[in-house]
Length: 67
Image (tube, rainbow, N blue to C red):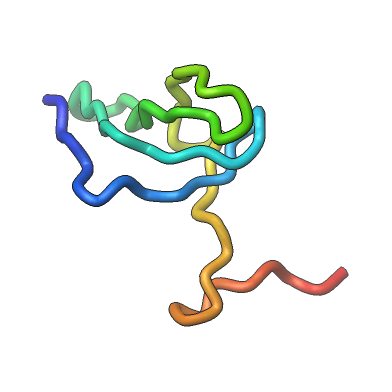
């Protein structure tokens, strides 16, 4: 199943900040796959669920942990 994300979701990926535009669910025992456009380059990459994180959002209480 492919789900279009409206609005796009800002994520932190191994290649830097990105916007997720689609989510791919291949069923049980498969990681979700996030189809993202990298902010800096516009490249389109697909990342497995364990490889990405939501970007910080102070309003929602998602702030990076202090070292």
